[in-house]
Image (tube, rainbow, N blue to C red; front, side):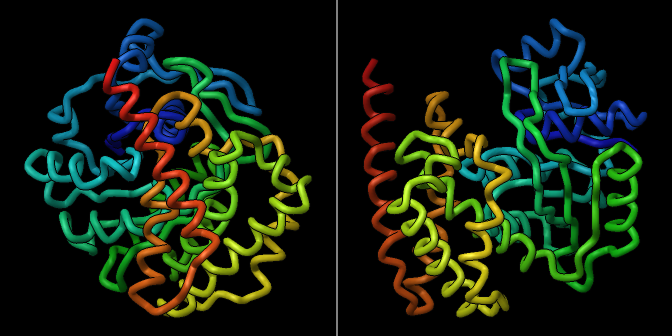
Length: 312
């Protein structure tokens, strides 16, 4: 299969590399130092728990190289979803599918409006990885897993199964879900519980678990998000908040994506992970006071940081 990776960071680089290693024709869209390093090294280098390798493929910064792709792995930051998707519309084939591997549940809405819901596949990604350096993605502990599904009943189920099978054949554990948005909401619960707090305190997940006050705050954030999801028609159980906290022990050494972005001077996915739930809560009449406080603190901090950077 011809596969395009849009956003060759930790997530896109990891999955694209394993698919390339499995024999698929993969085109990596990269930028800046990452692009330079990949070209210099002959591909994306992966340090995984199963061994290290360098994946070959087409490495470019031009979307035109995606013209023949059958499947697009959409892995850009949520802040760039609409802009990048709009640029892809006149380039990719009308029958190409877009698989979003992004955080949050709002990207599906944007992509569906641009490409049509029937062409969008969504995946909940369970991966602990980061860019060790430009052109090198490092997996941290724990096996990687994907749960994939179509957005609508009109989605191409045989193709969903085909994508899941090719992921499994490439060594990536993959399952198919008939209710992918519920799965994505559950993943969003973990992200909204730990990402904002970890970015705010600039600490790993374990620092939240080990501090009684932060642990309680995280549980309250999770509870607020569950209340919003339930009002939105996603059937989640109240007990999920405590369960999620208790089951996060294996991830105690994990640096969340928002923390990594903050440390690397990149825009954090504040709106997709926090702002979306706060706004959705307001629309549905569900209060989210703890999350909204953290959201406003992070947003103010980010605006000041970006302002300082722009003034240099």
